[in-house]
Image 1 (cartoon, one colour):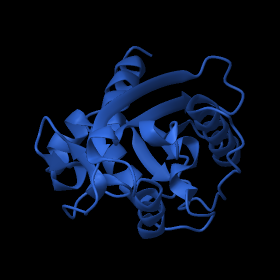
Image 2 (cartoon, one colour):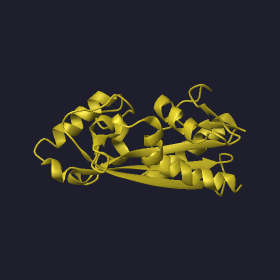
Image 3 (cartoon, helix red, strand yellow):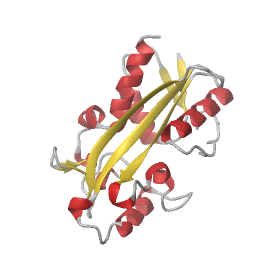
Image 4 (cartoon, one colour):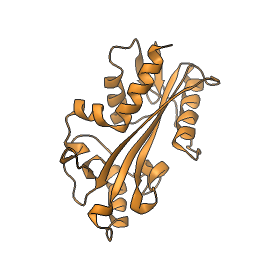
Length: 196
């Protein structure tokens, strides 16, 4: 079954494809299908994930999976949260977002920089599906001052995992898939899809 991923993020596509291995699904990015991104007007990760999934499903006339995820920093009252991908502005890249985060935390001691990645995945069979599948995951860590590692994307080089003694960007891909917020959410979604 072809399923459209409501994202143009190559990192997400790669991670989700790896997590879906063995299911009879062929994930295709909405960018490959010429579907523009929808404005994320939801007020929660769940709301944005559903909005994106319904938009992509309607445009592609295919089932759709959407992810809404971000990083919540306790010292910043949960920011950047929903705005993680555009924290430094609508066209910001990872470097700009990370720079803004570090500026916001410059007077916060490292021990007080607790944070978590959160992910909500939504699956809809068609745009108006009244019974969407939702799955979520969270991953605890802390924000450090200097980047470490070259894997992952987004805030991964600054997301320190005390229990592993490394950043998310230093993990092997398989270990990251096992531990991450997206990996947790996908395993839950995958279990729900297998029951369909």
